[in-house]
Image (cartoon, rainbow, N blue to C red; front, side, top):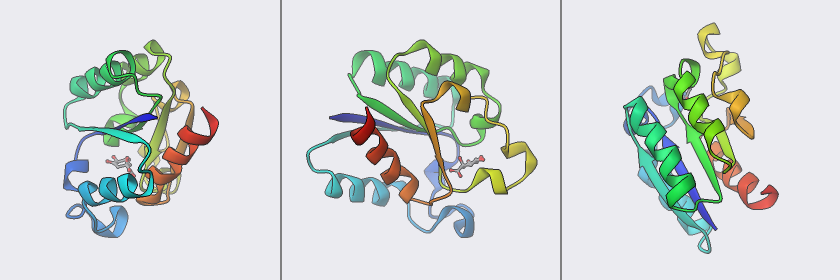
Length: 142
Ligand code: DQA
């Protein structure tokens, strides 16, 4: 199964960025661990700090790359992006909203997700395991 993973703004700084909230590992390490754990699945990974590039990646993974599911951690755009919401609605591939931190327990502005209602489900608060749980959800329920 081909599974897409899209990380949004500032997630290129994982490991350096507020490590008490987001952990000490960079995403390369997290991705390698996923690849080792799920050797029969293929992961397509994309990260950008630019909203439109995230939208292009949703469309590309869903319509051209044939991903069975997409794990999307849109970072701060989670809370602001109508355009990402629309992109998720535009494709039939299920998209899961992923967060390392438990956004519901943080600042109030993080309690709103404009993408969430367009997503198949949300996994939030399990650190790097949020991605692994996302893979489990894609593999077992889709
Ligand atoms: C995040 C939570 C967002 O609120 C924040 O803007 C991020 C990371 C998370 O993974 O916990 O950049 O998506």
